[in-house]
Image (cartoon, rainbow, N blue to C red):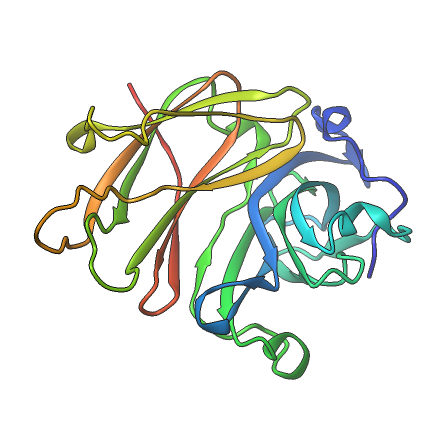
Amino acid sequence: MRWSAVPIVVAALAVPTAVDAQETDLVVVPAVAYGLPGFGGNLWTSEVYFTNPTSARGTARMGNILPGYTVPPGAWMSCEWTGPWTLHLDEYSSARYAMGSDLCEAQEAVGAYVFEVSKGLVVSSRMVNHDPEAIESCCPFLIGFGTEVPGIPLDELPQAGAHLLPALVWNPDRCGPRTFDTSVGFANPFGVAVNVTIDLAGDSADPSNPDFPQSLTVPPMSWQQIAIPAPDTDAATCGEPELFDLRVEIDAPLAIYASVVDRGRQDGRVVLPLPIE
């Protein structure tokens, strides 16, 4: 299964349209991956699920790709498209979409997807840490530790202002192997750039930490993810993993998430932001 000629511009889809005579929503899955290398030789790959809890038949279509990167570079934009694809969901039913068929033979890919779905449909996904051979030789469903990455309607994305990414984990002054990795990701499904400032919040605030605040710009129709470095103070004793919180300020709507990965088991969780009053 491949997609059609040129990706649809999300800005043109910003207002729900009629699909099969139904009102629709635009939903972003803010992080998807295919064959993305992790620790220990395993890979990260996403599965996307569509659920219709309504009493009417529903439809799901690809709206746009917010590219991060692919190997080889530009694979998402370099092939001939033969779609678009559409999923039809009966009432009270679900369907699964597996990454891979949309990647134009890329070996690795990471970014975000925007879907156009009938109003009332729910979009969710799971990013799985799996054996490299699992995609081709194992099962219809990926097996391994994973984390849910929810689909978020565009009109429910964090708005301009301050937001809290809570209960993240890092390991200051560690002596041995990495125990936890935390990253912060952004998916911008709109036609304007968004300016972002990241700083430590609450009890985590530390004016002496040279890594904060951080500022970046997320270009239109794009995906970014940055690693959050744990502090290293040259302490005489080895540090233990600790909770910390981040304050994220944005000047326009933007999908925001944090990824916390337990490197001992290659098990991750996704944290969504809370608005700051």
